[in-house]
Amino acid sequence: MTKKQRAKIVQEELEKLYPEVPIPLEHKDAYTLMVAVALSAQTTDKKVNQVTPRLFAVADTPEKMAKLSVEEIKELIKEIGLSNSKAKNLKKMAEVLVEKHNSVVPQTYEELEELAGVGHKTASVVMSQGFGFPAFPVDTHIHRLMKQWKLTSGKNVVETERDAKSIWNENVWNKLHLQIIFYGREYSPARGSREKDYITKMLFEK
Image (cartoon, rainbow, N blue to C red; front, side, top):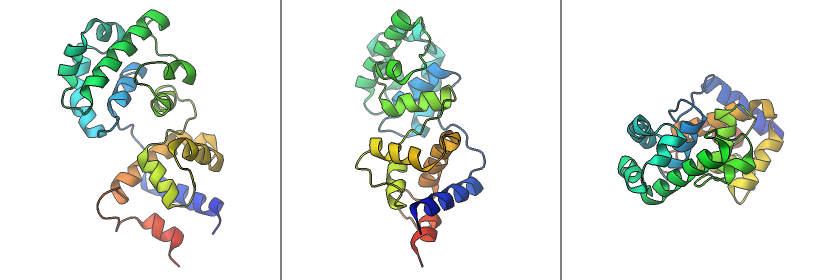
């Protein structure tokens, strides 16, 4: 089976499983999405969704966040890992948005990635889920499954993202990256049983 054939099967099976894919992080606009994604590093979306209502009740705009002290932000997100550095980043991010971008989240990778706490993956999520631009944010689930399905030999998420974009048409990127994440969580977790991972079996078992 060629790589192209495997990619086609993956896409078809994921479309059957997840014809609709909700955005996992709760948010109301591009700013609250960016904050939620920045908070999700090395923690679960579920945990972020438990913490952000309290945070957004106090600071759901860059202006409000910038007015809080780092200690106040940390207190609101203390249940999340790396809360110290994340609190500093959220304050710095908000200050730059207010001063440089008139409190509006920019719509380019370059400007997004200049913000504190925003790496390429976070910028890709904001471009894709916040603004609807074609993007393929690669997280650890996607990186692992793409390697498992022999759709990439990427040594890191940057190489895996490049391969994903070359395999699939850009009109499916925004949906497909979420479908792969949902599949990884439900059928092929990094830890625990992968008995349910029928796509991998379908691709490689005779």
